[in-house]
Length: 97
Image (cartoon, rainbow, N blue to C red):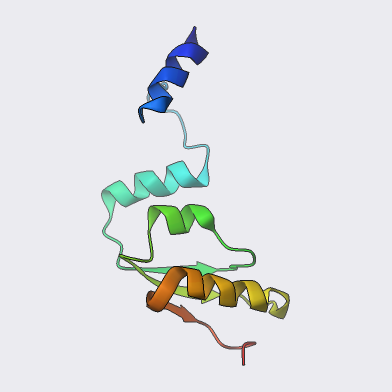
């Protein structure tokens, strides 16, 4: 019964959960955080393949981004992310040309 109710509510953007339960996902945690603070810029340290939860909750259209990744292996992916995030993105250029 719980699955049916939560399935229906989830389809319209709601959920029922016990109060005081800890946040169990990065997306939910960031969403809760965004309700309580004003964010103008985001520093994503250890970007690697990217942090989609971060980009979803704090969209680049409203926030400036600084992407930081020390491992040059991820250089191409970070450059792709910079294009996806748009003009508000800066890259830490230690290993980038």
